[in-house]
Figure (tube, rainbow, N blue to C red):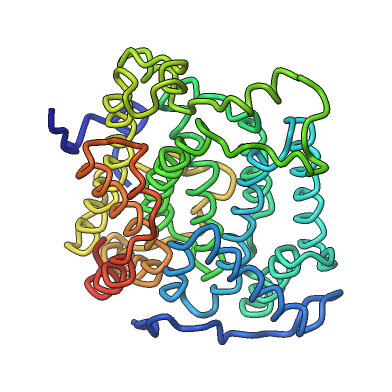
Amino acid sequence: MTRTFTKGPWPQSYKQGTSQCRPRFYSTPTYSTLAPAGASEAEVQSAKYYCSGLLQKFDSPSHTLFAFIPPSAQPAYLALRAFNIETSRVADTVSTPTVGAMRLQFWRDNVTRAFSGAPSKEPVSILLSHAFTDLDARTGGIAKMSKSWLMRIISEREKYLNNAPYPTLESLEKYGENTYSTLLYLTLQAVPMVSVTADHIASHIGKAVGITAVLRGLPLVAFPPPPNHHSNSSPLGGTLDAQRRSQGSVTLPLDVMARTDVRDEDVLRKGAEAVGLRDAVFEVATRASDHLITARQMLKNVYAGRDVDHAFEYEGEEGHDYGGQTTKESGKAAQQKEEVERAFGVFMPAVATGLWLDKLQKLDFDIFREELRRRDWKLPWKAYFAHRRRMF
């Protein structure tokens, strides 16, 4: 049976009412300020190269989309994306959740030191501190990046250190909100940008990216590479967590697996031939596609001078207080359009996510196909035209 994405009904929580500079293609970082206290300018430049290399190796779409980020926010973008890689890889590079928790505590300490202006001699921490100091200097201390949001990303990663499945599809959505959406909020802060419209669009894009990231990683989590027996992090005992890691796990939401009659033992034995697996992947991918469709419609509404069609569910929460924004109704449409114009480069992960979901659909939702783990040569051109036309 051929499956295609269709826009499904939203959960009740979403129905709450309503609310030019062109970058040089493949540009390199040119924006520079004084190094933060405790780090020399040479250390900051070295940290930029390190973080850029980390993106190129582990997150090539983010490396490609770097060119579209506003120049002033590029150091923050590199630091945030590198931070995301470092924290997301913890679960896959440690022997037990206990060791993973210790590594994540290391990153909590790094974030705290970076905000204090005295970063540890670690490249990502140095560049984060540079981004904080840079933003403070550019805005005279008015704009700040949220420390609590960075801590939120770490805490969300900590919940799934043992690669356990998500209880529900909504909990997977929440994971996307607390990780990838939060990365977009932080990047918007670095622009700087305080906008309920931009944050609202970023929320949907981030959820789509987060859900897609879990789908992309499913084959690698289900069939992890053999352990390195010469590594100091190899498990010394036959713990349940170590046994689970050696056998792999299936990270699809449990409620979706129940609805599609997927059993994790079947997936671990049969791989792509497991009964109901494609149906389960289709349901999860459709939710990611729904978020992209919603974000696209919101953009169309903004450019057409209309308001978005539903309220931002996180408005009023920490970091999402827009009480200081006072705009007359007559100028609201123009302001929303101007905000989206400034923020559009931050929305570009939607392009890479859309391309991957389209490829998954063409492969009839066979999540184990090798083509899904190859770099998409079309991304640079699709991204260029999406940015030029202001539509992804």
